[in-house]
Length: 416
Image (tube, rainbow, N blue to C red; front, side):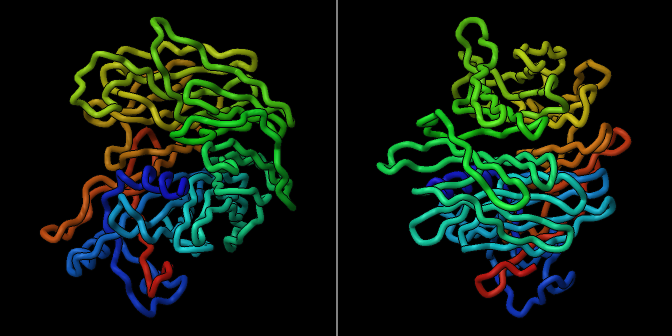
């Protein structure tokens, strides 16, 4: 199913083991319900059982209140048989694991958007039997609960969401057509009470995925990456307006990975430019150079980056702009760990969270950012120490790795 392929791509890089199944853990109990990375590594090493986990997205309602969602998956990663979603809350000092609703044992939450410290919606999908469905869950400051998206015919899943308030959210995703030959973009909006569908003129999308990330600077306007990797589509109220990204000379191919808007006249999209002729033995991402493009409310323009960016970075995968004068973009470094930072109108390279790969970054205010992703390193029978972290926090110009609680399984269910 499509959901499974999305899930595999989301966790392929994850290499931290989670504790094996345990029995009789108390829900919400810090000691009984979850464990630290080191303790989980020791348990996994002793029993020879591993689970992979990653945090796929993070959003902050305030500078000291963030929510992250992710998935813990039973090995083998290439054929996942059990996938449970989990959530974690940041209170400005530490992360705490939360109980979240898993409709089945094949559940995936891939995107979250928060409008306050007590309001977030996360979206994804789940499988039940041979069918897959849209998934949306809401955090109200006390507990997570299921929402009911508009049901669609065929397999379906959400891939991204952007919220401006408790009654203004837009989610994008995809569904399989009746002939099961093409994936069709879908968009739904949440008004605080119910979901409604937004008609799309696009009948099919590229086979590698659906809509990309989206950013909504206002309740009535959103910019969505897609329906292919080189275009950005603008949704104004219920009208879709195609706004392709600038073409590059010599027919070079670009891909856009993420987008963030600080205002209707200031959006930043990041990705990579494919450079042919490089060593074919290198992984595909080594054939890209970083790309940053800006939307001014009318058109796109390519941002010229400092030479250090092209020397130290490959493609960019995530960006967050809390204001028109501050952005942070992260991606694949050629060596070391670097990110791009926009301050006072100038882009420059800066240190990045070295302990995390596949980084997703969110900055609630200028100078404070949270990065989540897949932990680097792993656990084997010969080593019981987990290396890396799923979360780093940027304050005062420095990234620091955070201690993150891990969920674990209990009699077929996720114990938290």
